[in-house]
Image (cartoon, rainbow, N blue to C red; front, top):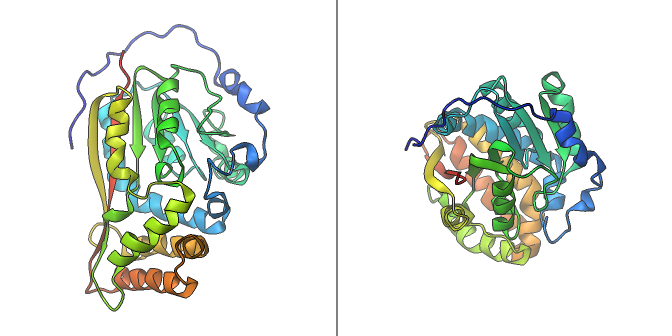
Length: 308
Protein backbone atom coordinates (compact mmCIF):
# COMPACT_ATOMS: atom_id res chain seq x y z
CA UNK A 1 0.00 0.00 0.00
CA UNK A 2 1.35 3.35 -0.98
CA UNK A 3 1.08 6.14 1.52
CA UNK A 4 0.01 9.64 0.55
CA UNK A 5 2.42 12.55 0.63
CA UNK A 6 1.74 16.18 1.26
CA UNK A 7 0.13 15.79 4.67
CA UNK A 8 -2.07 18.73 5.45
CA UNK A 9 -1.26 20.59 8.60
CA UNK A 10 -3.97 21.19 11.15
CA UNK A 11 -5.49 24.53 10.39
CA UNK A 12 -7.81 26.92 12.10
CA UNK A 13 -11.22 27.02 10.52
CA UNK A 14 -13.38 30.04 10.13
CA UNK A 15 -16.93 29.94 11.37
CA UNK A 16 -18.93 27.74 9.10
CA UNK A 17 -22.62 27.13 8.42
CA UNK A 18 -24.29 24.37 10.36
CA UNK A 19 -24.45 20.93 8.84
CA UNK A 20 -28.25 21.09 8.64
CA UNK A 21 -28.14 24.44 6.83
CA UNK A 22 -25.71 23.13 4.25
CA UNK A 23 -27.97 20.17 3.53
CA UNK A 24 -31.14 22.24 3.35
CA UNK A 25 -31.23 22.32 -0.48
CA UNK A 26 -31.59 18.54 -0.47
CA UNK A 27 -34.89 18.78 1.36
CA UNK A 28 -36.44 20.25 -1.80
CA UNK A 29 -35.19 17.43 -4.01
CA UNK A 30 -37.97 15.30 -5.47
CA UNK A 31 -38.38 12.17 -3.40
CA UNK A 32 -39.43 9.84 -6.17
CA UNK A 33 -37.04 7.17 -7.41
CA UNK A 34 -37.62 8.53 -10.87
CA UNK A 35 -35.64 11.68 -10.06
CA UNK A 36 -32.73 9.82 -11.61
CA UNK A 37 -33.70 8.87 -15.14
CA UNK A 38 -33.89 5.20 -16.08
CA UNK A 39 -31.00 5.79 -18.48
CA UNK A 40 -28.82 6.95 -15.60
CA UNK A 41 -29.96 4.11 -13.37
CA UNK A 42 -30.40 1.06 -15.63
CA UNK A 43 -30.30 -1.31 -12.66
CA UNK A 44 -32.93 0.54 -10.61
CA UNK A 45 -35.13 -2.52 -10.18
CA UNK A 46 -32.22 -4.67 -8.99
CA UNK A 47 -30.98 -1.94 -6.65
CA UNK A 48 -34.43 -1.76 -5.09
CA UNK A 49 -34.69 -5.52 -4.52
CA UNK A 50 -34.30 -6.87 -0.99
CA UNK A 51 -31.30 -8.86 -2.20
CA UNK A 52 -29.37 -5.60 -2.55
CA UNK A 53 -29.59 -4.97 1.20
CA UNK A 54 -28.21 -8.45 1.82
CA UNK A 55 -25.51 -7.76 -0.72
CA UNK A 56 -24.48 -4.46 0.87
CA UNK A 57 -24.23 -6.10 4.29
CA UNK A 58 -22.17 -9.04 3.03
CA UNK A 59 -19.88 -6.80 0.98
CA UNK A 60 -19.26 -4.49 3.92
CA UNK A 61 -18.43 -7.45 6.16
CA UNK A 62 -16.08 -8.89 3.54
CA UNK A 63 -14.34 -5.72 2.38
CA UNK A 64 -14.22 -3.19 5.23
CA UNK A 65 -11.72 -5.09 7.43
CA UNK A 66 -9.09 -4.63 4.70
CA UNK A 67 -10.31 -1.33 3.27
CA UNK A 68 -10.44 0.72 6.46
CA UNK A 69 -6.65 0.92 6.74
CA UNK A 70 -6.50 2.73 3.39
CA UNK A 71 -8.18 5.82 4.83
CA UNK A 72 -5.05 6.61 6.82
CA UNK A 73 -3.41 7.81 3.60
CA UNK A 74 -5.74 10.84 3.51
CA UNK A 75 -4.56 12.29 6.84
CA UNK A 76 -7.93 13.88 7.50
CA UNK A 77 -8.38 16.39 10.33
CA UNK A 78 -10.51 15.19 13.25
CA UNK A 79 -13.41 17.53 12.38
CA UNK A 80 -13.43 16.59 8.71
CA UNK A 81 -16.42 16.67 6.40
CA UNK A 82 -17.20 13.51 4.44
CA UNK A 83 -19.72 12.75 1.68
CA UNK A 84 -20.60 9.13 0.93
CA UNK A 85 -22.10 8.95 -2.57
CA UNK A 86 -24.26 5.91 -3.23
CA UNK A 87 -24.42 5.10 0.46
CA UNK A 88 -27.17 2.50 0.24
CA UNK A 89 -28.28 1.35 3.68
CA UNK A 90 -25.43 3.21 5.38
CA UNK A 91 -23.22 0.21 6.06
CA UNK A 92 -20.01 2.09 5.25
CA UNK A 93 -21.30 5.54 6.23
CA UNK A 94 -21.70 4.27 9.79
CA UNK A 95 -18.26 2.69 9.73
CA UNK A 96 -16.78 5.99 8.57
CA UNK A 97 -18.57 7.67 11.47
CA UNK A 98 -16.85 5.26 13.85
CA UNK A 99 -13.49 5.78 12.16
CA UNK A 100 -13.88 9.58 12.34
CA UNK A 101 -15.91 10.22 15.52
CA UNK A 102 -15.84 14.02 15.14
CA UNK A 103 -16.61 14.13 11.43
CA UNK A 104 -19.74 15.53 9.83
CA UNK A 105 -20.94 13.00 7.26
CA UNK A 106 -23.68 12.97 4.66
CA UNK A 107 -24.76 9.82 2.84
CA UNK A 108 -26.48 10.23 -0.52
CA UNK A 109 -28.49 7.56 -2.29
CA UNK A 110 -30.96 7.66 -5.18
CA UNK A 111 -33.46 5.26 -3.60
CA UNK A 112 -35.86 6.59 -0.99
CA UNK A 113 -36.35 3.28 0.72
CA UNK A 114 -32.64 2.67 1.29
CA UNK A 115 -32.24 6.22 2.62
CA UNK A 116 -35.12 5.54 5.01
CA UNK A 117 -33.51 2.27 6.04
CA UNK A 118 -30.19 4.00 6.66
CA UNK A 119 -31.83 6.67 8.80
CA UNK A 120 -33.65 4.07 10.84
CA UNK A 121 -30.62 1.88 11.37
CA UNK A 122 -28.28 4.70 12.29
CA UNK A 123 -30.57 7.15 14.06
CA UNK A 124 -28.14 7.33 16.98
CA UNK A 125 -25.58 9.02 14.72
CA UNK A 126 -27.81 11.99 13.89
CA UNK A 127 -27.40 14.90 13.48
CA UNK A 128 -23.65 14.41 12.93
CA UNK A 129 -24.46 11.86 10.23
CA UNK A 130 -27.32 12.54 7.84
CA UNK A 131 -28.81 10.55 4.97
CA UNK A 132 -30.43 12.23 1.99
CA UNK A 133 -31.98 11.17 -1.27
CA UNK A 134 -30.07 12.57 -4.22
CA UNK A 135 -28.77 12.07 -7.73
CA UNK A 136 -25.04 11.30 -7.99
CA UNK A 137 -25.00 12.92 -11.44
CA UNK A 138 -26.30 16.22 -10.05
CA UNK A 139 -25.40 16.45 -6.39
CA UNK A 140 -27.22 19.16 -4.44
CA UNK A 141 -24.16 19.65 -2.27
CA UNK A 142 -21.92 22.70 -2.03
CA UNK A 143 -18.81 22.90 -4.20
CA UNK A 144 -15.39 22.72 -2.60
CA UNK A 145 -16.78 21.65 0.77
CA UNK A 146 -15.70 18.11 1.66
CA UNK A 147 -12.37 16.82 2.93
CA UNK A 148 -13.23 13.34 1.62
CA UNK A 149 -15.73 12.16 -0.98
CA UNK A 150 -16.36 8.41 -0.98
CA UNK A 151 -18.04 6.33 -3.69
CA UNK A 152 -18.20 2.55 -3.44
CA UNK A 153 -19.92 -0.11 -5.57
CA UNK A 154 -21.44 2.50 -7.89
CA UNK A 155 -19.27 2.98 -11.00
CA UNK A 156 -20.03 -0.48 -12.40
CA UNK A 157 -23.79 0.07 -12.23
CA UNK A 158 -24.16 3.38 -14.08
CA UNK A 159 -23.47 4.74 -17.56
CA UNK A 160 -20.95 7.56 -17.85
CA UNK A 161 -19.31 7.07 -14.45
CA UNK A 162 -16.89 9.86 -15.34
CA UNK A 163 -19.75 12.32 -14.79
CA UNK A 164 -20.27 11.10 -11.24
CA UNK A 165 -16.52 11.24 -10.59
CA UNK A 166 -16.52 14.83 -11.87
CA UNK A 167 -19.33 15.68 -9.43
CA UNK A 168 -17.31 14.14 -6.62
CA UNK A 169 -14.36 16.33 -7.55
CA UNK A 170 -16.60 19.39 -7.67
CA UNK A 171 -17.76 18.99 -4.07
CA UNK A 172 -14.30 18.09 -2.74
CA UNK A 173 -12.25 20.86 -1.18
CA UNK A 174 -9.07 22.01 -2.86
CA UNK A 175 -6.62 19.56 -1.32
CA UNK A 176 -9.48 17.19 -0.49
CA UNK A 177 -9.55 13.51 -1.40
CA UNK A 178 -11.66 11.10 -3.42
CA UNK A 179 -11.96 7.45 -2.42
CA UNK A 180 -13.45 5.14 -5.06
CA UNK A 181 -14.10 1.42 -4.80
CA UNK A 182 -14.68 0.36 -8.39
CA UNK A 183 -15.77 -3.20 -9.13
CA UNK A 184 -14.38 -5.23 -12.04
CA UNK A 185 -16.12 -8.50 -12.82
CA UNK A 186 -13.21 -9.98 -14.75
CA UNK A 187 -11.29 -9.99 -11.46
CA UNK A 188 -13.45 -12.81 -10.07
CA UNK A 189 -11.78 -16.22 -10.27
CA UNK A 190 -13.08 -19.67 -9.42
CA UNK A 191 -11.74 -23.17 -9.86
CA UNK A 192 -13.15 -24.69 -13.07
CA UNK A 193 -15.66 -27.47 -12.62
CA UNK A 194 -18.56 -28.83 -14.62
CA UNK A 195 -19.42 -25.18 -15.23
CA UNK A 196 -16.49 -22.80 -15.71
CA UNK A 197 -17.24 -19.41 -14.14
CA UNK A 198 -14.78 -17.76 -16.52
CA UNK A 199 -17.28 -18.35 -19.33
CA UNK A 200 -20.04 -16.67 -17.33
CA UNK A 201 -18.00 -13.54 -16.62
CA UNK A 202 -16.46 -13.29 -20.09
CA UNK A 203 -19.55 -14.13 -22.19
CA UNK A 204 -22.86 -13.73 -20.34
CA UNK A 205 -22.09 -10.61 -18.33
CA UNK A 206 -20.57 -8.55 -21.21
CA UNK A 207 -23.60 -9.33 -23.38
CA UNK A 208 -25.94 -8.27 -20.60
CA UNK A 209 -24.27 -5.04 -19.57
CA UNK A 210 -23.94 -3.90 -23.19
CA UNK A 211 -27.69 -3.45 -23.21
CA UNK A 212 -27.54 -1.48 -19.97
CA UNK A 213 -24.79 0.87 -21.15
CA UNK A 214 -22.48 0.06 -18.25
CA UNK A 215 -18.90 -1.23 -18.05
CA UNK A 216 -18.28 -4.49 -16.21
CA UNK A 217 -14.53 -3.77 -16.32
CA UNK A 218 -14.70 -0.21 -14.99
CA UNK A 219 -12.37 -1.15 -12.11
CA UNK A 220 -9.31 -1.20 -14.33
CA UNK A 221 -10.37 2.01 -16.11
CA UNK A 222 -11.03 4.14 -13.04
CA UNK A 223 -7.39 5.14 -12.53
CA UNK A 224 -7.38 6.68 -16.01
CA UNK A 225 -10.64 8.53 -15.36
CA UNK A 226 -9.28 10.01 -12.13
CA UNK A 227 -6.07 11.01 -13.89
CA UNK A 228 -8.08 12.73 -16.61
CA UNK A 229 -9.83 14.72 -13.88
CA UNK A 230 -6.44 16.03 -12.81
CA UNK A 231 -6.33 14.33 -9.44
CA UNK A 232 -2.94 14.09 -7.79
CA UNK A 233 -1.21 11.48 -5.64
CA UNK A 234 -3.22 8.71 -7.26
CA UNK A 235 -3.05 5.38 -5.48
CA UNK A 236 -4.49 1.99 -6.37
CA UNK A 237 -4.79 -0.79 -3.82
CA UNK A 238 -6.70 -4.04 -3.88
CA UNK A 239 -9.00 -5.62 -1.37
CA UNK A 240 -8.77 -9.39 -1.72
CA UNK A 241 -12.03 -11.12 -1.01
CA UNK A 242 -11.10 -14.79 -1.04
CA UNK A 243 -11.66 -18.01 0.82
CA UNK A 244 -8.54 -17.43 2.91
CA UNK A 245 -9.19 -13.92 4.20
CA UNK A 246 -12.99 -13.85 4.30
CA UNK A 247 -15.33 -16.42 5.87
CA UNK A 248 -16.67 -18.64 3.12
CA UNK A 249 -20.25 -17.98 4.20
CA UNK A 250 -19.75 -14.21 3.86
CA UNK A 251 -18.19 -14.51 0.40
CA UNK A 252 -20.94 -16.89 -0.68
CA UNK A 253 -23.61 -14.47 0.60
CA UNK A 254 -22.41 -11.86 -1.92
CA UNK A 255 -22.85 -14.25 -4.84
CA UNK A 256 -26.19 -15.47 -3.47
CA UNK A 257 -27.48 -11.90 -3.38
CA UNK A 258 -26.29 -11.32 -6.96
CA UNK A 259 -28.03 -14.52 -8.03
CA UNK A 260 -31.30 -13.53 -6.39
CA UNK A 261 -31.26 -9.96 -7.68
CA UNK A 262 -29.69 -10.26 -11.12
CA UNK A 263 -30.58 -13.63 -12.66
CA UNK A 264 -33.62 -12.27 -14.46
CA UNK A 265 -31.99 -9.21 -15.98
CA UNK A 266 -28.81 -11.07 -16.96
CA UNK A 267 -30.93 -13.64 -18.74
CA UNK A 268 -33.09 -11.07 -20.47
CA UNK A 269 -30.19 -8.90 -21.61
CA UNK A 270 -27.76 -11.66 -22.61
CA UNK A 271 -30.08 -14.19 -24.21
CA UNK A 272 -28.87 -16.92 -21.85
CA UNK A 273 -31.61 -19.04 -20.33
CA UNK A 274 -32.63 -18.14 -16.81
CA UNK A 275 -31.86 -21.65 -15.61
CA UNK A 276 -28.37 -21.45 -17.10
CA UNK A 277 -27.58 -18.12 -15.43
CA UNK A 278 -28.77 -19.44 -12.09
CA UNK A 279 -26.78 -22.67 -12.53
CA UNK A 280 -23.56 -20.68 -12.95
CA UNK A 281 -24.27 -18.64 -9.82
CA UNK A 282 -25.04 -21.84 -7.90
CA UNK A 283 -21.78 -23.40 -9.11
CA UNK A 284 -19.81 -20.38 -7.87
CA UNK A 285 -21.54 -20.50 -4.50
CA UNK A 286 -20.81 -24.22 -4.19
CA UNK A 287 -17.15 -23.63 -5.06
CA UNK A 288 -16.80 -20.94 -2.40
CA UNK A 289 -18.37 -23.15 0.23
CA UNK A 290 -16.36 -26.25 -0.72
CA UNK A 291 -13.57 -26.62 1.88
CA UNK A 292 -11.10 -27.93 -0.73
CA UNK A 293 -11.61 -25.19 -3.32
CA UNK A 294 -10.29 -21.65 -3.61
CA UNK A 295 -12.06 -18.58 -5.01
CA UNK A 296 -11.03 -14.92 -5.12
CA UNK A 297 -12.35 -11.48 -6.04
CA UNK A 298 -9.81 -8.65 -6.39
CA UNK A 299 -11.42 -5.24 -5.87
CA UNK A 300 -9.62 -2.02 -6.88
CA UNK A 301 -9.75 0.81 -4.34
CA UNK A 302 -8.46 4.13 -5.62
CA UNK A 303 -7.58 7.37 -3.95
CA UNK A 304 -6.66 10.76 -5.38
CA UNK A 305 -6.29 14.34 -4.22
CA UNK A 306 -7.86 17.43 -5.73
CA UNK A 307 -5.26 20.07 -6.51
CA UNK A 308 -4.94 22.91 -4.01
